[in-house]
Amino acid sequence: FGGSTRTSDPYCAVTLLDAGRDIHDTQKQGQHKKSTLRTKTVPKNVNPIWRQQFMFEVHDVSMAQVCFEVFDDDFNLKNDELLGRVSVPLAQLLNSEGFVDLALEDGSNALQRGRIKIHAHLG
Image (tube, rainbow, N blue to C red; front, side, top):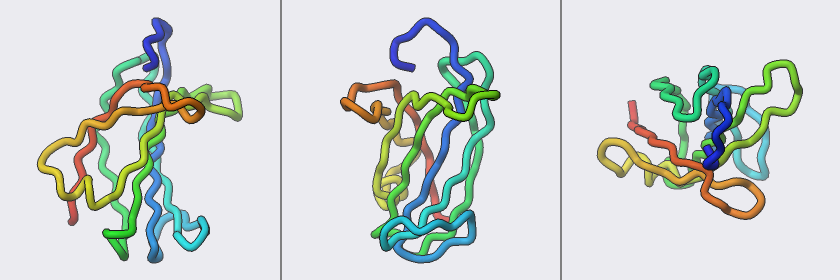
């Protein structure tokens, strides 16, 4: 991540913003509902492979947005370091065949901070 030679303990937080209601950890975000789930932490790795599945209840696919944020787990500290993030319309992920390769950017100046491959489907 970010071209650094140091190791990280990365995990990915996956947030669904949906115009409808959902069944997970619901919080208000403007007029949308927000659900966030996270992957396991992969210790000492700069190229993690999570292979985890998450299920979200989506009420309006055309309005839903998915945000992927990769963090370095600092374990004992309260603030994990953001390594990169990307936000995409859920419909874009669902309309793609196979994996979608997305560039992660840092939050402040839109520098590329690595890549993440995602596969999404309706179930």
